[in-house]
Length: 348
Image (cartoon, rainbow, N blue to C red):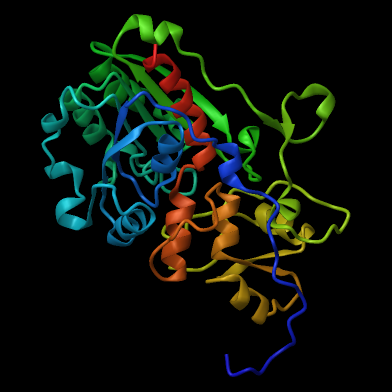
């Protein structure tokens, strides 16, 4: 910062990948959506692009609430310990006026990166999501989480806390989607629980089909998904691949600015000559602070792109806080694919 240190060796990158191109804005027929556990806005953005009108967002973390307000100053955003805590909200006020309720309850109780304590974890908010569905009675809901929630270990939990309480009123289907199948240059799987209030709607719903492929084009359909280096607009070094799953900097014991979640991820980033530790606040800072091994240092806008956010999405807070919001989010193009499939049913 004093101007001393190695000379920068990388040009400031100009990304080739534009997430909004994966999410053309749809006409939503005035259908409305209510958002819970909104975080930095992954689901909210995807649902908005799919054509739903925003009703309100609830989010506990103040910085994430500020991100949503900065991104969309006309949205009703309730954040912080008082306004953003869904446990104190009477959702009956939206009964009959919301078509879609969506949210990703905190994934830490189920994540492979955590202790997987499920319902014993105080962060387990699925019962609150279920309560909101029951009180709001939307035509459809989308609940999202880490794929571990769909594993055998949590099958009893899912049955007792999600499926059974809602199966009297909703037909629920579960799908696991891979981000790169929808054009996001990252290995990232998420589970979605999609519920419809009538059998007719549930029967007419079709799960999103992949729009992109990575790997052997002869057995794949759709467009080729960009690799990480190509997506970020980095020079061709003869090798490219999808980004490993990026880690949220808000999970784990320390507030770091690393997006690494495993030794395998470290090896993959190294093979791509990309430095995933000490992510910089912006591209100018990333260029100025040369990594010891000379690899390309990532910036917050780059990590946002890897997750499928447009790079001008205004994450509020210190770098670790911005990375936490990004890493916890649903890739917006994934949210868009699911929300679009639901919109198609509700529009008929």
